[in-house]
Image (cartoon, rainbow, N blue to C red; front, side, top):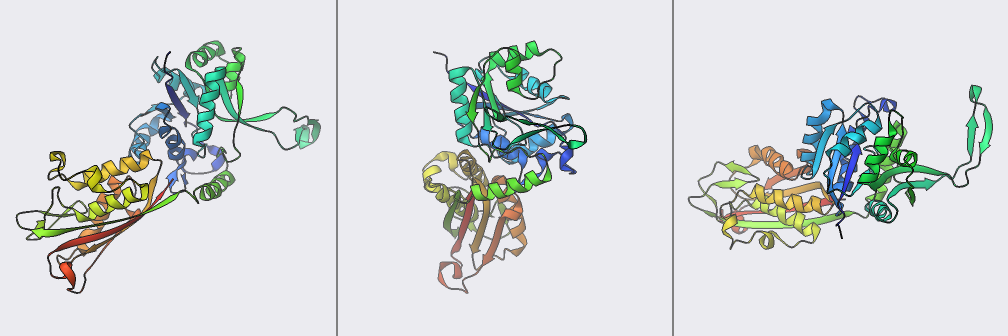
Length: 388
């Protein structure tokens, strides 16, 4: 039995002129991230999708690659140039796929709220029927308009469906459908398959799975995303402390601090980065930093802790979450840290694939009380909110 290997093609080469925006619509921000990032992430995190092909305007390949890298979506994603028509862009994506790919899903780059369940159902129905598309039954009465926008007929809506994406098919079927298309124009993959004589299974889509075409669509998507994320946040707290030690560099938040002593530890003893790692792991319910990077392992001896944070961030995105915000408090009597805090925030944000504005780093003393007040060491608290 041949194991199914699925790939996704996300055409996003359109200009989106109806949005009246300075950027193509797929790059406009939705919930703090570009629309395209939401669309790609849905397929990137799906366990059955082995590869994602993103098709964009030729002049946006490099910037899109950087965008996906910054959101940790580049490890199984390829960005290529699209064509003049949607079907040309999808064809370019098909040409990128290896022969071992058995199933392909095509999804609009400007349809950012697709669910994991809908992707899974399209895959399952394609396995049974060869091809499947997400669609919703038409609910409203349909009118046919004529000259001067006057109604000429009422259209019977019985049996009518409004097509969405994903649209999925066996790779060989879709390639054959393209070979039979010639110079004809088709608005979606289902039309191509129908023209080639292949039956296509309708899969119940979702009203939330909207395509962003006009400014009001973006406003609606913002509200839907806010409602959808209400119960998909996780909060985590992290704490770490290390004592001062001679002959060690003092590294906090990935920044080397000018100070006569460093901190003792198996790694670089960066209490700031360690606390943030623990906060993220705690929010995910994944234990603590010691479980993932034990101090008995030579691999982590003197390691730059920002590298550990990058691994924790990979775990976070693998679970479908991103960092909503992080709040960090460094506690020490010495040294003075005010001039270093901004650079710390930049380092931590880069490791978490977010912006420095999402990371707040501050420092305080204990008014000479306790071990930090006696200048014996440094401690740090971190609190994070993760969002899916």
